[in-house]
Length: 386
Image 1 (tube, rainbow, N blue to C red):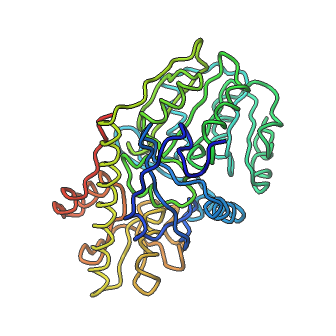
Image 2: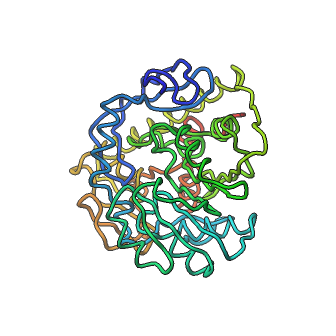
């Protein structure tokens, strides 16, 4: 096992980003989290990560002991923008629609969902693939009743309990949590047949800098870094594309007939990743300063009610926040962090802050009649030329 002070992928030396210390962090289930965590870049392979210290691992364990994914949505699936924009739809529905376009499925075999949560994806699979057996795996026993209510679905709390090679393995917002992702993928590979497909959906700071503020995300992948890991342990990368409002990466892997040795990225590419992380931190600094400036005159209205909103709430404190605004009608009328979630219809731009990814933020500011050139230029985050 690689020591925590070296890269979790290749064992290389790690470069620290010191400015991340100025920010409050949040858990991946949208709770403010008081503990700090470092942010590091491997100078050998370019993988962005947190050091696997005992303090970080213990903090993650505390988060997962009381984990409740998507608490704002009244047990509904999280909503995302689909292909080409348009109306919000469930993340699971968009994933299945995108997957089926590229990989027409036979209605047979087994679909294994790792990190199944409340079963949103498997519930859709049961409707769309009535001949498929379904397996949900989650470390939390709280997921069991949700899965066992789904027709043809069974629940396991350990991957080792699943003995039949699945046709499809899905991991949606899971791999970034795994302390040792390379070893975990090797374990999955042993379970797969030569025909099995492994579907991985992950957030990426390349498109959404706010991902860097999630405490229990241990690895921050790019197309290059995930592809390098996958190929070097014997997977072929069947496809990679951006989904969920063009800010998450959907990757499909298959066991390779032979190991494909990817070359480590050259120094220029690693330097490009370093600059992308630095510009992401600039972007977060700008949003934080804007919120602090507004809070000197008004109670701030925060657009959204997810990770970015929880982060900004932490930066301002409860006394600095008036409410949250959201376009998802299933959230409107609920409360989040003790503040009401109101419909995003009466936007007072002089007191509203948009802690969102750069593309969504600029689109909404344009819709509501404001173009923020200062933030979009100084803090803009573009995909590194990998």
